[in-house]
Amino acid sequence: KTGTQIQLVEMGARDGLQNEPGTVPATVKVELIERLAAAGLRRIEAGSFVSPRWIPQMADSEEVFRLIRRRPGVRYSALTPNLQGLDRAMQAGADEVAVFAAASEAFSQKNINCGIKESIQRFTDVCQVALEKGLPVRGYVSTAMGCPYQGKVPLQDVVMAVRELIKLGCYEVSIGDTIGVGTPIQVYEVLSACLDVARPDQLAMHFHDTYGQALANLRSGLELGIHTIDASVAGLGGCPYAKGASGNVATEDVLYMLHGMGYETGVDLDALVETSHWICEQLGRLNGSKVALALGTE
Ligand code: HMG
Ligand code: MG
Image 1 (cartoon, rainbow, N blue to C red):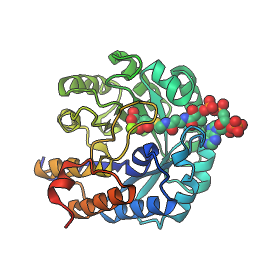
Image 2: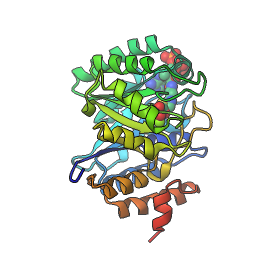
Image 3: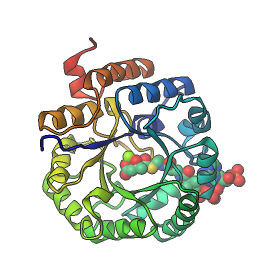
Image 4: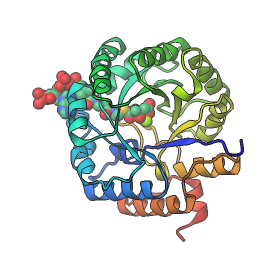
């Protein structure tokens, strides 16, 4: 493992803050994003151009993108569910956009108000326009390890969604355990099946830590050569259409594990822990990272 580089994709400002009960000022979001970049994170999901009626927490994404002082070498990305979202993202100067599909029909309906088939149709248009403009597109597959509405999700449904997104031109597909229910052997099986239709460098792991399984589950993907990991500083977040779901696995916890295993990330753990305590103070929220708690504030 020594020297193998892992790419971290920081979710705190998007997946993290999209579920906050209170209003977070754009200036706080911007400071968070700038601190994350200063800590060494090179891929930051900075916002979401979805319907402000559905997710009011992300309604100020234009402002956030406008105010960030861009750090060279950092990619600031955003979610775009449709052409309207893509248009907003391009106006705002996003470096990369993401479309988000689901492996479960019920979740697709609740999350984006359309079925899987129709969503792929929409994403075809989004990908076509984005790629024409030279914007890389990431794809997500939610509910890959289980669905809050439907329960079990057949493996083939996950694989099919991955295949469709790759076919549309997504350079990477992030496999979402939206409600954190997966366990390591299951995750190994699901990711192995995805590797039938994608190379390891085309996959990412996006695990929410609701049941405390995320680190163990990441280990399964690492064994399969998947080297891109989504994580959220302080474990911020949850999905508004997945009741009871907690945030992504904490970035600090992932870093501690990876560095301990000899992987490289380019991220400074101490700087990240400081940011983690700072954002929790801003939000009046308990810190969801064990490592941040263990390392304290100084
Ligand atoms: P809809 O209501 O079916 O859309 O929503 P519509 O096309 O019928 O439009 C209805 C209204 O919404 C119109 O306004 C549109 O202009 C507006 P009106 O004429 O009524 O005034 N609208 C928009 N406004 C701004 N930006 C847009 C946009 N699109 C439509 N882009 C839609 C469909 C997809 C838009 C809606 O369902 C939506 O916004 N859903 C977002 C859900 C969401 O953000 N979920 C959380 C992110 S996904 C996630 O967290 C999972 C992930 O982390 C992976 C994992 O953990 O598994 C990625
Ligand atoms: Mg998520």
